[in-house]
Image 1 (tube, rainbow, N blue to C red):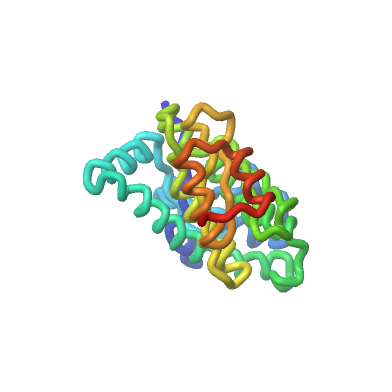
Image 2 (image 1 turned 90 degrees about the vertical axis):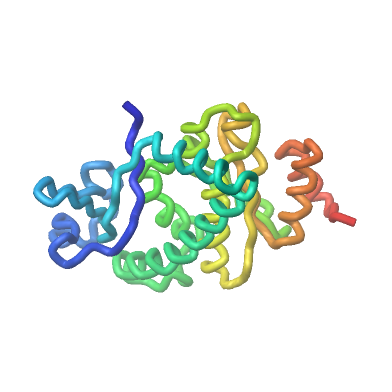
Length: 236
């Protein structure tokens, strides 16, 4: 049987809120599956620690979504998935700010950046979206890299010889743009579905992402793209 994936869909009502959170509101180590999710067998409602209702989906859902979009709109399916991800990330940034400031009793912009990012992503790991690493070493150059392990999309679709994680790229774009209050784009430059061991994303302004997209289409590797960016190359 395919593993379940969980997706937040709407805020929970008062009677659906996580009972353990009410008893231990300052508990932070709540990202185990049994701690993070509360399941009401009588109603079928699943609530997570942050009081959002969730649904369980199988890998068949991901395959159906991807193949259905490709059948309907062809190559434009990647743009649609990216747009969905961007809207998701933008909305989730607002939801995250609300629960982060309530749980930790501090302003989101007065928090350590890496702590902030790990706190945002941990629920995604609990929900089955994979683990990540954020590489800030090139931040002063105007871009960062994100490594994603166990992508729900890529592991489901398998080795298809091309990047497939457009939903994640959009999610990162939407969230980080909201966080820093300026538009940022994101592109996947390495994917598990290309035979790699993990997925890699580049986040930056439009000019850098356009350049990376061009180099990727010309056959450049993630390492090549990183070197070109550090060398200050631009599209002519």
